Image (cartoon, rainbow, N blue to C red; front, side, top):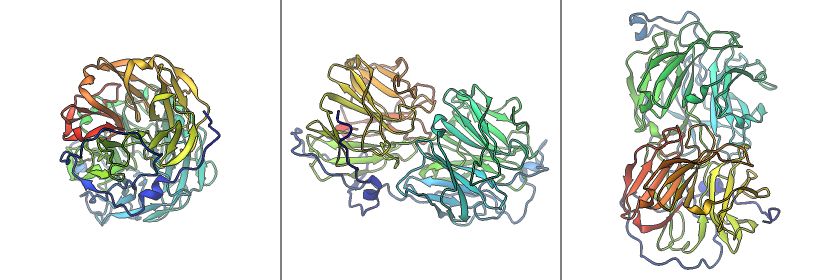
Length: 586
């Protein structure tokens, strides 16, 4: 492998924002392309057509209009109370005293829906690299007391940056950045845990340890004090939501959900060394939601409330009673599957791939992207008709910071990324897999399997233009007829790989985040998967941040397997038909 011979790849996003002339047809109602055997690709291909998600209709949201702080309907409930010391809102973009809803759409743009009922508008999050898609956006509140909220952006490679909100519709460039945060699978805006009035952070490791980062009040230099371990065993939760102050004492409280749907309430103690009191179970059945979202006080009683989204995109409000419990849920919106990321969401953020590529028997590429509701978009023609017949291609999780999968082609032993040469020496591999970061640095990596079954890891440089020297990380992988991976299937925030044996048995290789031994011992997760002619890892399809799988049987029927978040997969759901026109999926 000649890793030194590399040239810059063309920006995928630059091509995506160009005028898209792609053909769009409905999924499941595909016209059969002329059947022909793949021939040999004559030359390496150039970059494909721009892959641009369509702009969706804005979701609906109906919340109370507020003219002044007032008691909510929760205050009239038996045993309910209003806050004595109301906590400050953490993302009050328009300055009306209430937190607003910040989300990133499937189209990659950020939007604000004001709590006062006015129209949704686009929010400009100014960054040094306009092509970068952040892994997470966190809203800790007003950290310096100037009356404007701050925002934190988290890159896939672990850079946490602080931005001041300049106005209701934009933020400034980063005033501070810190690195190394990729070691955590979840960073939570926890509200004020220490009693100084500033919003603090919690961060969880894949092993379940919790660290407190107390705010310092200085937003340009070390805005958070050194992390202090304050808990362990939190790996049992798949959603953690910093709810601000729920019980009216001015201290931040928290909710945590198990994959089984049990909801636990942690009341803040005000003690930095032990920031929470013993947990209390306050609900069950919350596994019907793919995201639980903090809203702070949405009713005017000073108590932190929650929202929750179903996979179908319906949004419900849970109004606080002041004791960690809620009134009966109320439907407040529809169409919320258009949100790929919420500020204040409970699930682990994912990064790198929420899409798949399919090639017809005639050699035309079509692109599908996730709709966050268990469905794929209408197909988008991503290449010239018949132009990719015979090409040796792969579609791994993003190898740079734009968050989109990369279209790789191997031609005469040279690896090309989106049409640009990366390096030579790749002819010895009969399978390439890109589950995402496997080495713990947050940068997308690539696995190569030789014909004899040896497995090698290539650590990406974060730019999609090169890899470090290969590491042998396994052998005997020639017993599998399919290796796939895109994201975290087991729920610990580390990227995994799935392998299918010739008898149809499916195995999960859980990621470790360690380059020299990137996977734990395999675990059997299913049988009978040899019924699928095509089997692919598209990343998260249903909006919960966990990796999903798709299989296409001999009739062309398409089945989705979603993750349980525990290293297992749910019962399959049919999501399409007519896909027998494709001879490869990636």
